[in-house]
Image (cartoon, rainbow, N blue to C red; front, side):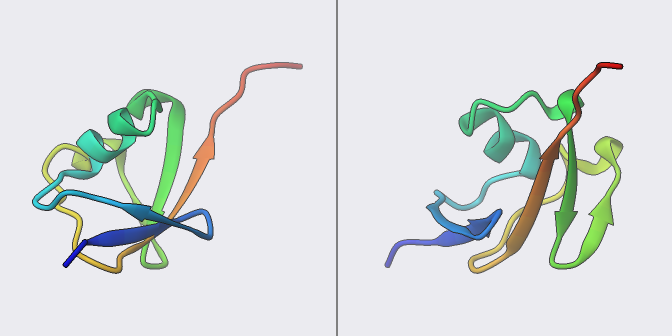
Length: 68
């Protein structure tokens, strides 16, 4: 059985256990450059490393862009 999460509407296979921080790095995202919502709840960046993903979690990930 393959575990998966939905990230920005796309099903992504994930090897559990996996922290949110590890997931982001595996998706080539810098944890300090994104804002994350997990199952409808905002997640503080300080929680990324300790928060474990579960099968069928839903993530919304927004990249922070500098600019003017």
